[in-house]
Amino acid sequence: ACLVRRTSYTDAISSSRVDGYPLKYSVILRSSGQDSHRLGMTLTTQRSQDAQSTERKQRFSDVNILPVLLLATVLYCYQLGDNGLWIDEFSSIQDAQALPDDWNLTRPLYYLLLKGWMIFGTSDIWLRSLSVIFGLASVFWLWRLSKRIAGPIVGIVSAILLACSPLALNHVQEVRMYALGNMLTLAGSLFLL
Image (cartoon, rainbow, N blue to C red; front, side, top):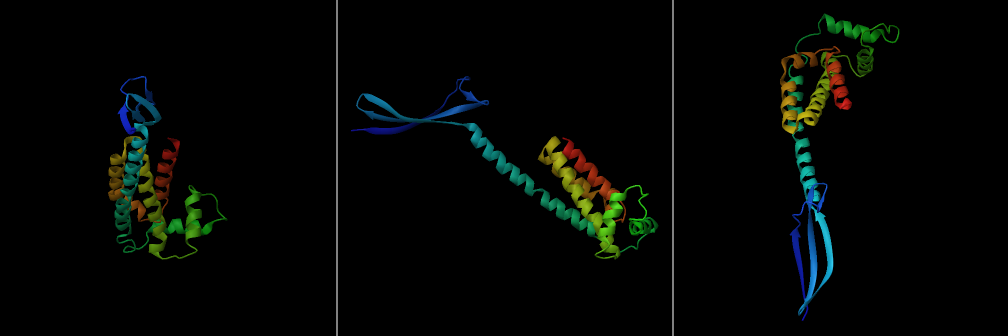
């Protein structure tokens, strides 16, 4: 009678490692009486299991930013149109309307984007919502930057702090270039890493 059995064990010898992970052998033996013949052997490493675990953690970590972005959206849109536009916001609108005749502006990218944004509407809420989009993007880029530098927990905490920051709330609810400057600074810092 033939007996086929599978034996698995982990090689503890330091020389039997692949990229620092111990090898796992899976050997299939066929025994008939006193003779044993090896039918096959497969090698795996702990690395494949670690990679799957890391991917699961990564997906879970990426989902954590959604409640923070929702919180930021609620905070940034709260009473967005309650106050009227003030003098600096009017100057931003005037500078955007002066394009392309007057390119002698400090930050022409914002005014160019605002001019395109004004095609679809000119209400106070609509004009300020451009900065809200830049503010939400800032929260996202800060999360990515912090996560890359210090880990997922620090990324979430820093995104929450930016979303709840009174200074960020103030800049996001203005028709000014501050939210765009913040977003571009964070995105540039991330891409430099």
